[in-house]
Image (cartoon, rainbow, N blue to C red):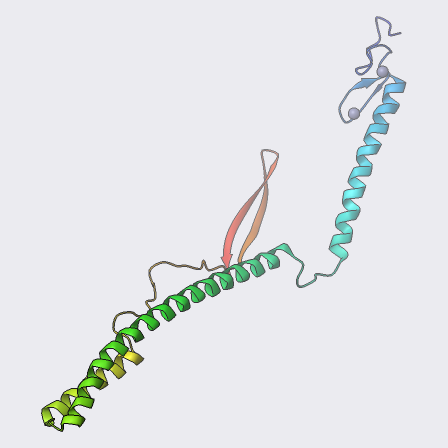
Length: 191
Ligand SMILES: [Zn+2]
Ligand SMILES: [Zn+2]
């Protein structure tokens, strides 16, 4: 039991606090002091464990494909390529539909010219003016087949559709102790 002169153990408040922990300044009885050291030993073991794990990681050579930053780059690349493939596929489908539609219209126009040309041959009533008109019409249809005038591919130069990535190095140029905390000056360096 603690006497009036003795300080009580901070932890159990039953026995006299005969030993002081230099760390937390608790005054402890022998049994609680031993328990306290035991608790600190457990925490120390945790530190050693974390220390050993980190040491092992530092001693393992870098594998060129395992770091999460490298994976981040790979993911960006995959996402960007996926975006391009999807959009290219969508645009190809749209163009194929429009080309088919365009061709149907051209076939209609061609039939009309063809009928006139055949009739001209049968009746043998064509003159220079008819020949140059038919030739001009045929050339127009040929051009339209190669280069349709009613649709085209347009590049959107305004919006950056795929976000560019870059690697930035933060240089810790000075480490200072301020108000008991570490403060770092960061300098962004673009590489
Ligand atoms: Zn105690
Ligand atoms: Zn302590």
